[in-house]
Image 1 (cartoon, rainbow, N blue to C red):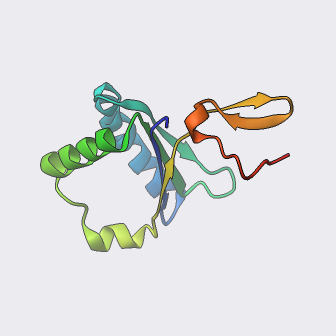
Image 2: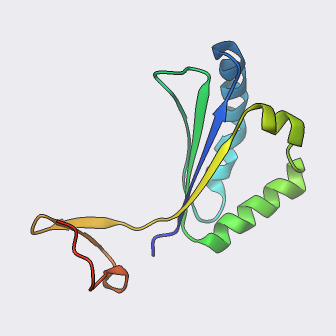
Image 3: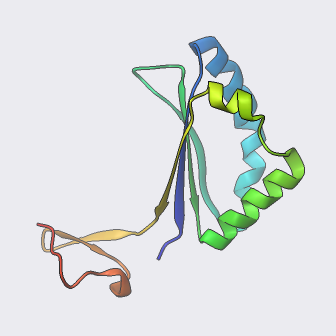
Length: 121
C-alpha cells in the first residue's frame, strides 16, 4: 500500500474570496511538506468555478496522516464549524495504490494488492 490520499473541496462564495484564501493557504501549507510522510500537499482551482478550491494531499501512511492532523489541531485548533459549513466542503479519503500498465492491464505495483478474482480490461 502506498499510503493515503485526501481530497478536500472548498466552495467559496466568489472568486475574490477564493483568491484571498488561496494566498494565505499557499504560504501556510509550505511547512506541511516538511512533515514526516508528506508526499504531496497542493492547492488547485476549478476552471469552471474559480470559487472552488481543491486541496490534494498524499501521505505515506494513515498513521502519518493522523499525526499531521493531530499536530494541526494542537497548533491551530479545530476549524470554526459555522464558517466551514458555509464553504460546503467535501472530504474524500482513499487508500493510495500505485499501478503499472502490464500487457494492457493496470495492475498494482505491490503484488499483495492484486486481485485474483477481478480482471479489468
